[in-house]
Length: 181
Image 1 (cartoon, rainbow, N blue to C red):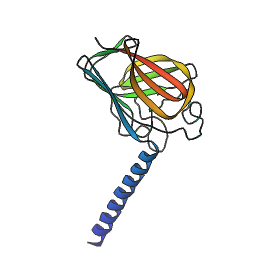
Image 2: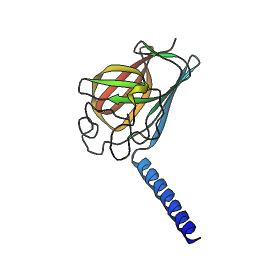
Image 3: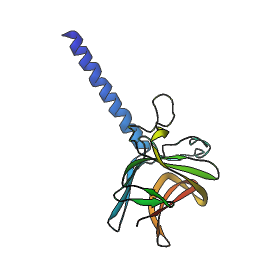
Image 4: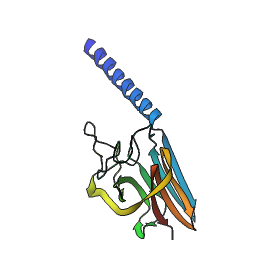
């Protein structure tokens, strides 16, 4: 009986500590969902938005040449209700995790068909992504911007009549072209 009580107390303590860590982590990188609806298609991105906080972002807290979860905490997800074209390559309707490999001149943008509980493997700091589930890989050039953006931002924007998915942080912007047929 005493062992059962001790195990119950330890289990509840563990769950409480886990929830406390998650809540405190979310304060520093809050969740966001952005969506775009047009022509009976809905596109949606769920991600966590870290802050720069005076740190060097690219080539610093986000390592060049290494897979990034494209945000913080959970793996970023991209969902489409219709088949779409991203940089003239088809992405079937469904839900994907969105990964990037930042580099100075271009980024690899990866749509992976597997869902992951967390964006990095516990204890290693390496991305949870399993490349065998990569569905679409793209090379997107880096665009420099004049204003430093404090908080990582993903948004959909219509530019010259076409849809773009923008990934913006610090003085870097990645512009991913999307077409709905």
